[in-house]
Length: 125
Image (cartoon, rainbow, N blue to C red; front, side):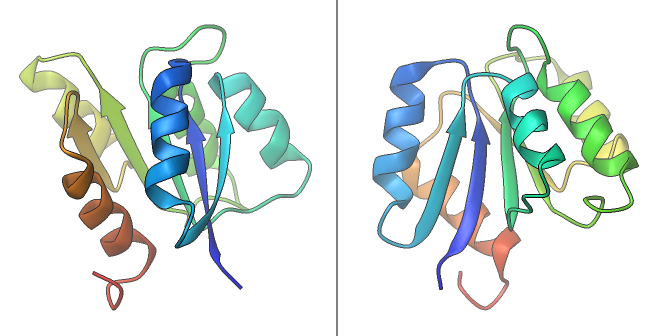
């Protein structure tokens, strides 16, 4: 059985790219915002990794991260934060709030793959 990745990304083109990059190795679930991702989690679904953009409509990546890390059921799921924001405080904030890792957009697909594989299983990288 493939491990499951949950992407919360409001850019539909990037969502398609993520599915294409990972479809052979993982089950890829994508949502257009954090609110949709939260609804899916609240139904009892538990992915192996959550990858979320920070800036999204309705429920942003910070709120999604806060929910996951504050939840008894989900706090152990690694969260990879993605953003086009380029301030030094963003990385520190993400890590301090419990993110497992951080990647600044734009990025090379191979860099994302390495981070994902490392977070899902240190033995896959």
